[in-house]
Image (cartoon, rainbow, N blue to C red; front, side, top):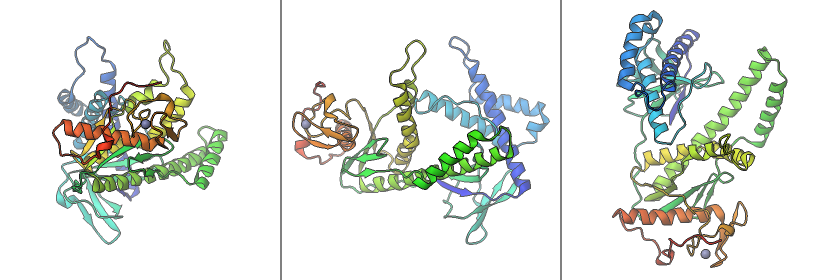
Length: 397
Ligand SMILES: [Zn+2]
């Protein structure tokens, strides 16, 4: 993502905050409308109806009218997208936005002259009703920017992210298939045997974070000290998130460049993260362990990796059914629940294959993609013949 640090003046910062407030207000109205909806009622208003309502609201409210209609309309559009993601089961249901948390707004209809460079390290972007806001020109701004999003993180830092779907990366044309298994301890295992670990905070940073969290627990609510500690925590957390984002960019580019077909598990992350707790009637099992696992999965920034892969290698990402990928032996195809000796080790009791459990899963994912692609009449995948055993055996054990 091409994200740049914004350097607004205090006056501009106030104006940007007003845009954020409007976007939040409109978003929360949309959330409320949909929250009232119950099965059997007339459907909650769609985007068109909501835009009409927004026009009415602007006619009545001077303060809303004083804001940017682009900001307000885009908040509705973002909400519509969030609902689509929710129904598509890739994201959670959109919820209320609170002040000071994930604040932001989007501007569309950006013209070529609206982003310009002033000097080697400084540029500026035109924001409706705010004017030219300086930004740190930390790398080239992509050409043909059509929209951008301005955000303020919890540490109070402003950023602008220019929406330019990355140029697709050419396939190497080697018919190479790679399976990618997403893990927690290992962030991604490749069927080639490579284990990729997403960067997190350094040990010294983790220790500092722990100290800050303890200090926060002791700080009085509403005190100056508390807000200082809070923003220090936010800064550290943001650093970890930034590192993982960079990592996702690097890995997705590398995979798109090295392989023709990239196979990933079609995981319903939302389902996985939600199921642990269960319901009051049917409480989940191993809730504590699962909760820890879930945090790990979310932290690994999974959805993002797949999303970027789909941008950079359009049509070359295959999502496969994850059933048995972790239990099945990638050498002989037998599914054996007891072959997984530990989190890291896989040993097949049928053919003797032994290896890293995540790599074994990644190899299964690659095999499954081979099937998926040839079933669709895609290119031949040059898979060695000895890797084509009876894959549809029933699970053993
Ligand atoms: Zn085996």
